[in-house]
Length: 418
View 1 (cartoon, rainbow, N blue to C red):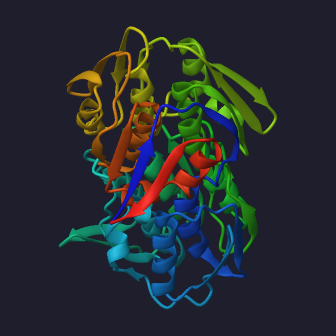
View 2 (view 1 turned 45 degrees about the vertical axis):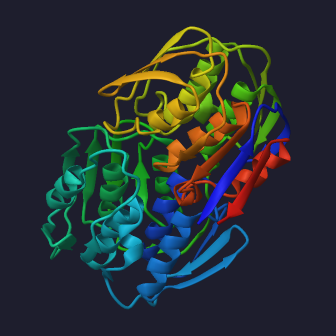
């Protein structure tokens, strides 16, 4: 088992390049299954464990998958089945996008219920509601989802809650349905827009992404295309927060600054300086930061995936901060680990009250999920002394070479195999 060992207390200086967006890539790779002819050449794909899982799943279905650097080529014209029953399906949440993709193209799918980070109850009821509205029959037996349809017919679907997963999954299926589908109360996240742009590059007719109403006119087939994934908003936010917490000055390249506006606003409120410049942002920080209140919300609100890393810098900011996690009910498991480092945090339900302390102290801690792992890395970089983080397989699911990128900025961090 690997662990990360961090000798903290050092400011960060330099520049880094952000990888392609994990949350977009894990939907775009399954969407490539929908091309009945040609090949999909997808650039700026992060070489992370979740993407590697999807590659293995596609290979098990009979696809040809080739990977060179950060470009993946997928030929799904030779697919030999619609049963996605592998252990990889159980290891990641986004594997459920196989349902929408296979249902859209083949009118059937057999998929193991997805796994992923234990950050709370994340039902797929809105996915099922959408599939059934399009005319599919959905059965769940023994942890496996069976979806079949004689044909898919476009209709109007109103999501009871804003759900990124349901918006993308139903959009996938509706792309090859007959007629027009209207998705209301849809998620607006950048990766929803990116998936729609990828589908449109394949020949789909999707309009309105980025708003809460998406209009999809079904087409008869999709073809291969060339596409480049957007930069990772959450990885960029992680490095922005780390720089603000550690102090220093870092240029973060290959970003879309508009996607980072909610994070930028909070950092500026705390006393850090954020300078936008085309496809990069520069974060400068010196002295103590001020505590702030945050509430996680669907885009364009403050991202739930950045809440845990933000908690790490709030732990050493002046005054009291209130963190309201409105998206997932179990996304506070990192708090007990931060307390081992000296953080003063109390949690009631989904609300954490953080009283800033002068310093954190290195300790042995455990990554309980992907973004909790990022939070502990930031805490370790801020803390005095040595921090050891175990269970870093969670971190590898979503961050490409994170320790190498931090070392480039002057951090003392290394991966150790036990």
